[in-house]
Amino acid sequence: MKSVALGFGTAATHQSSVGQSCWYAQVRRRPRSASVSCVCAALALLAGSPTAAQPPTLELLSTLEGPADLVAVDGDYAYVSAANELRVVDLSEPTRPAVRGSLSVIGRIYFIYVVDQTVYLVCGLDGLHIVDVSNPSSPRLLSTHQTAGQALDITIFGSTALIPNLMTGMEVVDVSVRSAPVLLSTEETPGYQWAIGSHGPLVFVVDQPHGLHLYDVSNPEEPTALGVRESEQLVQSIAFGDNNQAYVVYARSGLVEILDITDPVNSRSLGSYQSSGRFQRVAVRGTRLLTPMGRAGVELVDVSNPSAPTPIGSYDTPGTPGGVALTDELIVVADGTALLIIRE
Image (cartoon, rainbow, N blue to C red; front, side, top):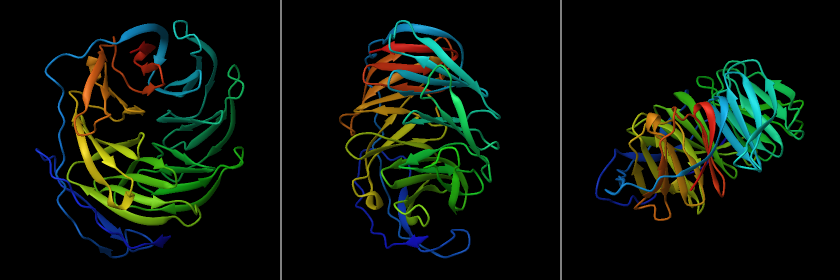
């Protein structure tokens, strides 16, 4: 793993603070065994809050009964999981969603990633399952990659899969041949590798309790460590939107921080949104942020002005939303015992 020098961005001061965070340079092959040079600065964050008026209620279009813990959407199809089962749901008629196919795999499904008619199922200690969904009525298991640790998340860059393994580092896997994935390298971080996200070749590894570790995986056989963004609060996950913005979810707080990552090693806070919910992940599309709010349902937030996010709609679902997804026109919610299709 190559190392690079790291500059430090200017922190913008806002009205209220939600802890301190910093980037520091990595100068080591393995974080557990080499020295770290650290230059920290206080980063004051804007804690955006919902307006006093209640946002308008979103419209339920349809309900598809059946267990639904997680969901990912690609084109006209939703990929829904519960326990170890994957269902392929046709959304071409949003008022009449229909199951087209299903597949059971070994191990509980913790995360779903879909790209190019391929579904990547992350299954904890049972590793990664790669599924061909080119025929929605007959999803087909192509291969299984056994991870060294407990896989909880995945992101894809080109033909490279990047998998955080909780206690055994980030695995970098070549999936150019989907039926024969090949481990290329493993990068360790000091704590628990809980989640991951990518923006082009830039990969952000959520390490608890140490924050975000940033890598450049342009050369997947030898990733470049760019730095670490520390935080006083536990980071839970990260998502990406338009205009080089990242959305950092903090654990057990309902807080989402919005970062400008135009210069990723000098990222700066643009603002934040304080939700009333407690959630692990959010969905982002364009300038819309969707947050699950536990038994209160889901909330849609306009983040076109990151310094002042504004709720624009909500829906109190019958169950407790787990996975959520956004399309250009629809909100798709895995609500525990059903899949909900909602419109703004």
